[in-house]
Length: 77
Image (cartoon, rainbow, N blue to C red):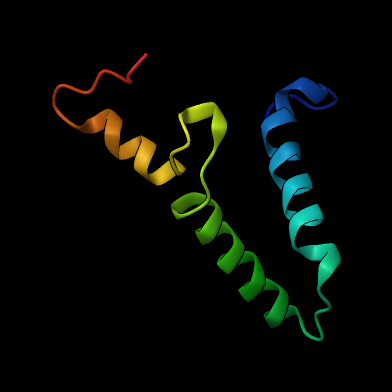
């Protein structure tokens, strides 16, 4: 998140929420706010720990981050 009125500062956050809405939110109905919060938590956990991303070598973000902290890692750029 960045400066007010500068869309490029928000690009990462906007992309994440757009992905959430298209992959999950629009396909489900939520009766209570608690259900929505639980769904967001579940989706974020899946997104970060299990969903593979092509931009980081088909690893999950959690696995990619772990690979950067491993001794001798050649993925740190």
